[in-house]
Length: 146
Length: 381
Image (cartoon, rainbow over the protein chains, first blue to last red):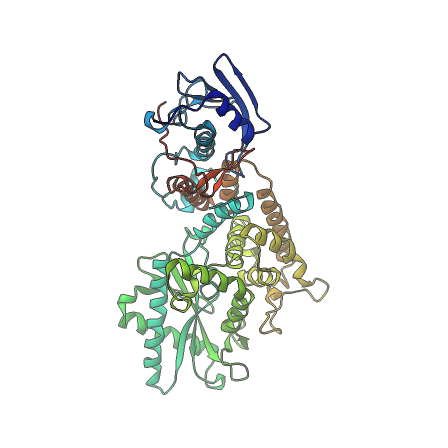
């Protein structure tokens, strides 16, 4: 059975990959803040990762995502922390920098797509959009000029 | 899918532009229909000891077919119907009637083509397909014995003088402009599909020039949505784009480059009027239609300025949602949705296929295979 990755090593890898990030390691708890740009065309987001080896890591988006909580995006809690994995997907033998961090970028990229029209591409295949006739679109958008 | 900003932009814009093209199944139906018509006409006219042909011209021949947003996203496919007579033997009016009659006989003899006569224009006959959303605009023509084998004489707007034209020659010029990129692209397609290049149809690979022309035609249609009669002719856009085009760039680079150069390639502008000459029939000036309509020339340059602004903006936008919303505003909502869907599906399958990696420092997810992002399910909430 592989041993759990020590906190110090988790911290070292995060620092190495993200030299501009802030990291504290105190009393058995790792706190990491960094700016992620999920794809080259994406916005930049400030995120915070908290991890002590007793619990699953938590990742929170610190920027206000301006969520309408009546119609929130999938996998986001009220405190803007994200649910990134199912139980079997992650354990303490894995590097945070190889899992939680890229999964966070992935969620953020899907969030940007979702914010266009509420379609979530992150979980399963979505049906292709139906071709809406221009005349219908023009009627529903109040005849705005494009 | 992409490894940097330019490639990601190309992927998104490309998916939007691809949605403007005629789907393969409809293309095949149209191709089959005109080939059937051509065969029929040769037999029909053989009775009078004459020959002829029907073949595509314009966007179908160039590979730049673009849905018409002001006609419910349908397609207009242009055809030439050549009857091999001498111009001394027939007037323009009589030729038009002759071609119309022959095509009517064709649709009756071959109902399986799905075509029926829809409209009679001043110069063309228009056929629509019974179930598919395309029209064939058929232009009657005679051969032009004074020029190359592909040269034709078509009706002029005054229905008196025969007007020399060469749509096959024009298409050959256009396709030659992009030959280098096309051949490289076809070789890559051939490898992927494990076929010989010769066994693939020409349209198996679309070049940046073809897609740029489609993008510009759609951008034009939206810009001129409330002023359709002043919109610049597709042949002007196509000619200037092809003249501006240089191979070797990404779709986004070519689009940006071409819109910068196009206005400068319009010649004239003084008392003699503007000139956009036909590269294969230099005496023909595509900008002749601006004479007597000075507003059209002005609107053309205004449109070019807007296109330059719009494509430059793509280069500086942040946020996938903003890129796609911008694509929807310049290419139409359907194209925006197509771009969104293509990117969303592609992004997820990139990770599922083990081809997604994270770059250090930014955390950006790009295509790669070394230390790829592991599988997981988003969960909860």
